[in-house]
Length: 168
Image 1: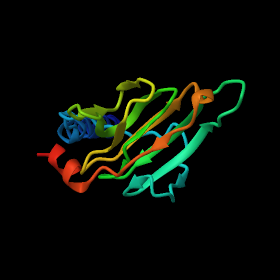
Image 2: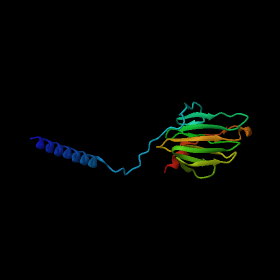
Image 3: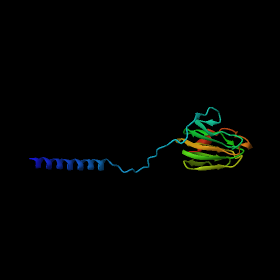
């Protein structure tokens, strides 16, 4: 009787192991798409409450301008469709796109699609705008060097007509 109980226990253990293995194999689905986890590097900041943007955007200053570094650095987050006005920086600007996708356009040139991982170097006094795509948000680090040459000069808004032509 002892031998039978031992054999029954072994058989049950083997059967349970096989069932667990089969369930694990049938429930495992190969990952055919890349799952992206968006991890925030810097805080979103405060909602921008001035009229230099169309739509909703947030700003978290990372480095405030001072006389030693003459650079300001901010993390800017745009909701889908949000964008800056046309503007220029006397000392130039660099954008480091950290998430999402959107547009960058220099006056008189076609707009460029920008996306996570892109770096945009904007020469001094170049009229331009940047912002999110219609269905995607955009986050970038905006670096304004050489602020001793002057601060940003805000110009006219990017019209809905100008903006909507980009997504066609």
